[in-house]
Image 1: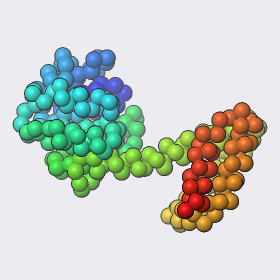
Image 2: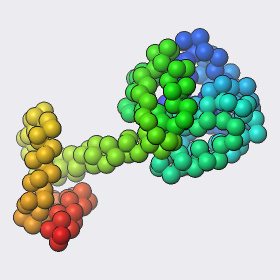
Image 3: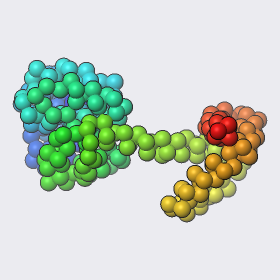
Image 4: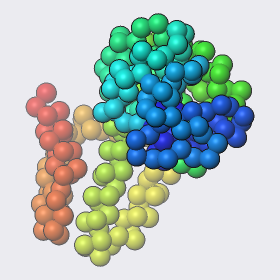
Length: 247
């Protein structure tokens, strides 16, 4: 286990509880109980069958680079970081004698641990699933090379994180306007009614009424500025609608 922060430590503890021999390294975090601490990345992976890299997108490639000489042939290197598809592909291209698996964690690890849904791609994805599924992991194999799994997660993130940002901006403005409870209830009711037909209506309506809706979001942005709230998401929506109208 490379990276023993919140996610790495919880995964490691669950593996230990299942009787797995876990070794780990993190320059900033001591290993949890049951995990044998090692001196560096290479030391941690030198006798591993499976490596879980759970550090950061920035550290994903350096972690592999520092471990390559110590990895035994046939080892599975599973990158669980939320990195761009190109980074996952670069890991697979750099690997020699080992298999790189792209693992996209599809829910927060805290509270879920090894049960966190994982979407997995790469040539050894089936082997990864065979190793972890019997231990209670929720693994779905995504056909395709390393990068195919994280690409799907990031596309979902555009929606989900974008939605969260829009809700935060709207509620911040509603607090300033004194109607936060009303808007919270309205948002909750709208989301509860979402289905596939709602998505079709959103997409169709956005294209069909782009000009009018762009004007509406421009007015909303003006209102937010008057309330002392920077309309970042509102402006982004306005700009998108204007671009659709231009086409």
